[in-house]
Image (cartoon, rainbow, N blue to C red):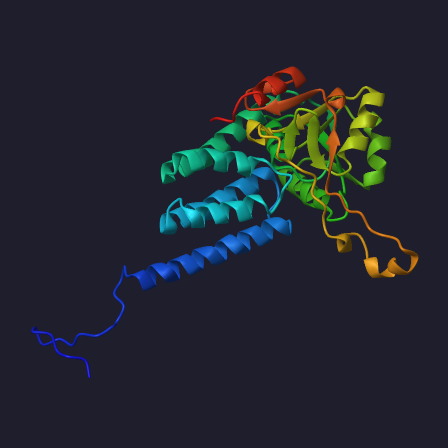
Length: 310
């Protein structure tokens, strides 16, 4: 039986608020959110560099609030950044935060993401004139923000949206555009290169902007080739956090079962390849729409020679 204290109250082992057990419980909850966020990014439930960065940084802010910027933060950051190895934005933001190691730096980055998107959207919207027909591929929050800004400025235009197999991210784009009141044509991927000659421009997003070109969803490259042949401008909407300053981006291979059942091919020795991205070289790109304006290959390469900063 527990002994009584001098004030007549029993001394025991009950946990008081603020004890290590409470902190352990907090960490377990946060760690579950880290794992859940990483899973959702990997499964494409969260997609688009802006959405991935915001989701990742918000949960990492919780990690820092409980465990600081030590080992647990580093491990959580690596897990989240590695969920989509082609994307570079979250990596660039984390590099800044790891230098400062403060919650203020996380908040500063989150504010920067919003402001950079606003300026990028403004710069991109100026390219869209009335009665323009624009082709886009996959789902890009940056491209959608440009379209939203142009629509808010009372520009009248139509968008050709490719379905983007095998996960059909183009349908998400189409639905969002319809919700904005923007007319769309929804097409199969293989029709993109054929129909691009009937468009006034192409505008796509990017997962990484590199010295040798732009990484974006598989199927972007053939559209860019057809656009060059047809003389149609090809623009990439990407804030400067998508620049691969450290040359670490790689093309992600997605699960083969996204395309088909590999077991059905085993008897023939056939295999399934499912690269999620392709590389569009600079010679096919008219310009990259950033928060600083529309930049060409020369300006991008000059930026890549430096370091990312906000």
